[in-house]
Length: 58
Image 1 (cartoon, one colour):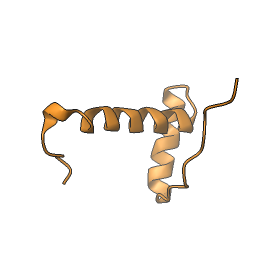
Image 2 (tube, one colour; image 1 turned 180 degrees about the vertical axis):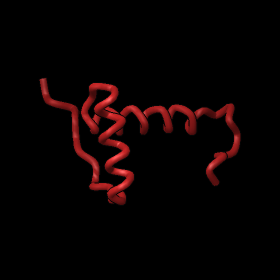
Image 3 (cartoon, rainbow, N blue to C red; image 1 turned 90 degrees about the vertical axis):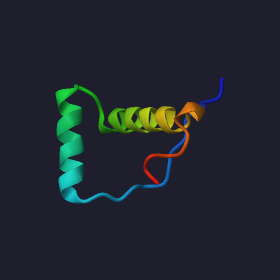
């Protein structure tokens, strides 16, 4: 079976944001990549919902 995982382009964040992300991941006993995937999935799930109407971030 072929691996269906891929990578995304790098995302640049400031050091304070990176430190916050690493600290949060540690409290959850997860890798930073897991936290990022979870956050992106929750964002897409919320913003792709047709019942939400217009994107609240725009």
